[in-house]
Length: 58
Image (cartoon, rainbow, N blue to C red; front, side, top):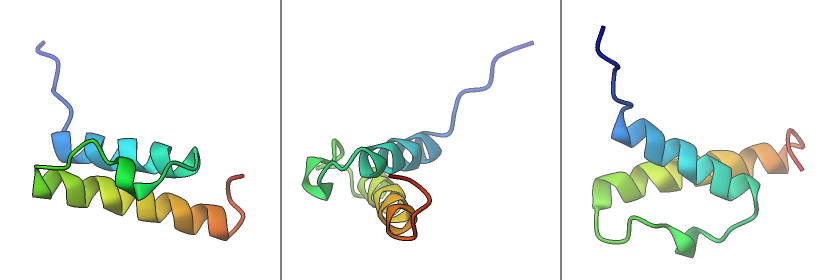
């Protein structure tokens, strides 16, 4: 059975979430030139900042 590739947008979102949890700035987004991936990364980053603000993560 072939292994499914991960959705690249989902991976960008997950990476953004992890970056947000670790306290990185949104200016450190690795997708500066690719707008679709950048928006996914920033969405994950914003979700992490919201989760940190509500006290789910420290």
